[in-house]
Image (cartoon, rainbow, N blue to C red; front, side, top):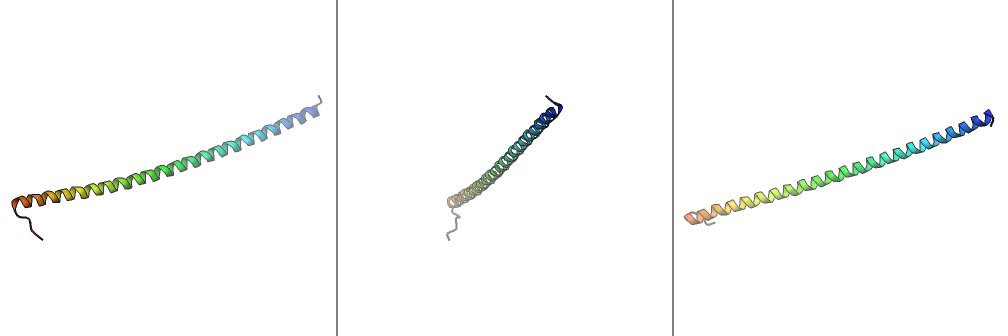
Length: 89
C-alpha cells in the first residue's frame, strides 16, 4: 500500500471518528436536556402537590377551629342553662 493510500485511509478513519464523536456528543446533549426537562416537570408536580396539601391542611385546621369554637359555645350555653342564667333572645 502506498503512502498516499495510507494517508487517505488515515484521513477517512479520522473523519469517521470525528463524525461518531459528534453523534455521541449530540446524543448526550439530548439525553441531558430530556433529563433536565423531566426533573423540572417533577419539581413542578411536587410543588403543586405540596401547595394542594397545604391548602387542604389549612381548610382542615379552619374547620377544626370552627368545631372547637362551636363546642365551647355549646358548653357555655349548657352551663348557663344549668345555672338558669341563659339569656333568652
